Amino acid sequence: MEFSKEDLTEAKRQIDSALHKLRETVRTLESKADPERYKSQITLAKRRIQAFGIANRLIENQLEASGLD
Image 1 (spheres, rainbow, N blue to C red):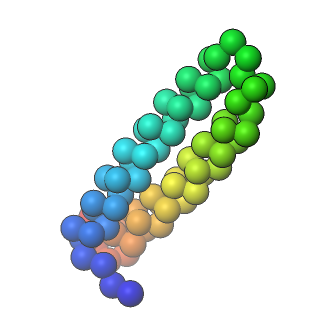
Image 2 (image 1 turned 90 degrees about the vertical axis):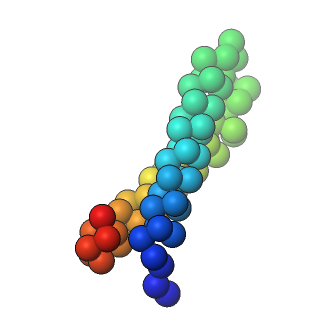
Image 3 (image 1 turned 90 degrees about the horizontal axis):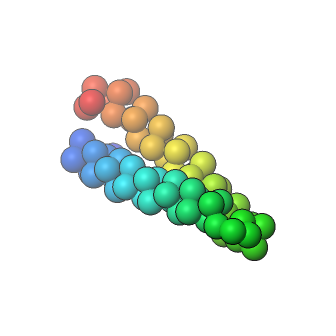
């Protein structure tokens, strides 16, 4: 499936935004008085950060490989 530069760039922008929000969420939850209480939410957010990071890198690779960057 082929994507335009605009599609890939917008997807990357959206992922970057989600990553920023997730990182802030992790910081907030970890700074709570009893972070152990939020362990599952913290784990989920960290896994999403990792998954979005992979997706972002794949988009960057596609842009570079296509000469679209």
